[in-house]
Image (cartoon, rainbow, N blue to C red; front, side, top):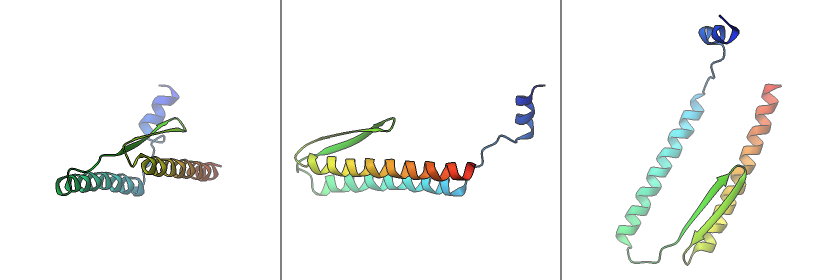
Length: 102
């Protein structure tokens, strides 16, 4: 029996996941479902308007922001703001995690 098997049997290398993670995961899922529902209701009630869309795609730490339609500028601006905030939160959390490891 080697060292890796001993650690697996004793359970010392298990990663504990806090309840906050599952709460945030559930909250994110609920927000996505509510957002889809709101868009669906708005499309049914106020149909016939112009359509705009935007997206942020992360490839590594680099965001790619795209948009189409008459309101694409606003969607791209919101996408860039969200991308910057996501990167700031990532780096702040990464710094905090490094402090706890040391």
